Image 1 (cartoon, rainbow, N blue to C red):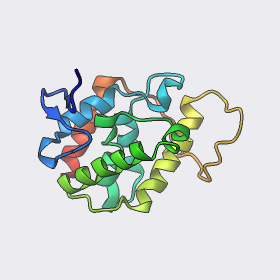
Image 2 (cartoon, helix red, strand yellow):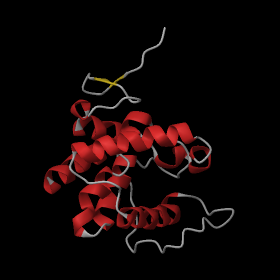
Image 3 (cartoon, one colour):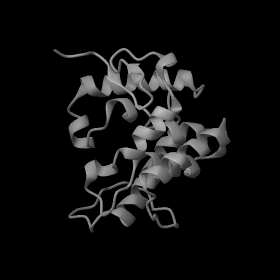
Length: 171
């Protein structure tokens, strides 16, 4: 006996395969992302998607900071898959893209996600690789230098609070 919905932190029913803007809640997004670990948990210390999103937001040009904060918000409802797996799963990518479009509409972000946000995301990935992972067995071939500042990960509660504060600051 299955369902076609998930229960969110706030107690809402959310239909991830048929997302509706009115069912989105930034508090649900912040909470879920603060408990999701980047890199499928293969980092040296717990590092949340919420903190990653906060850092991407701060690395974006000013006009794209809101997009930077919300660029991984679909993961709050769908979770995430490592890149090599996601590349082989077009249905998952389509679901994620559909949900991200609804998120973009709900939070007036415009569509598609700006290339500047993707560039900031990649630069942060280079920073995370340097600061949060063991030495790689091969180059990640990101084509980006890491940010100068080092990452000292926040705990989940701190990341959730910081994400929500950044959302309010940018709203």
